[in-house]
Amino acid sequence: MNFDENQKEELKQHYHRRGMGIGMALFMPFGVILWLLLGNPGMLGVGPALGISIGIAIAEAMYKKEVLGE
Image (cartoon, rainbow, N blue to C red; front, side, top):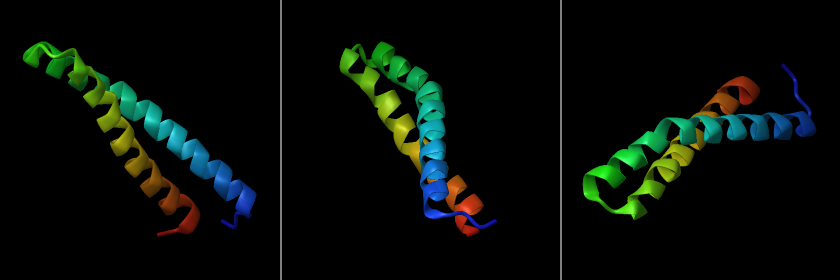
């Protein structure tokens, strides 16, 4: 498929939003588990941060596969 630059940017934002949302939802329990096991509430932030990182990486791969055909 041929996409113009505006459509490419919209698709990239779409995939990044989706990836961040899914990553945060899936990795939030990881932060809660760390908090409960270690007794340190600061570990609660590890889950969403890890989820966002992994979610954006997956979203970027999905974007490249669909738009750039890699």
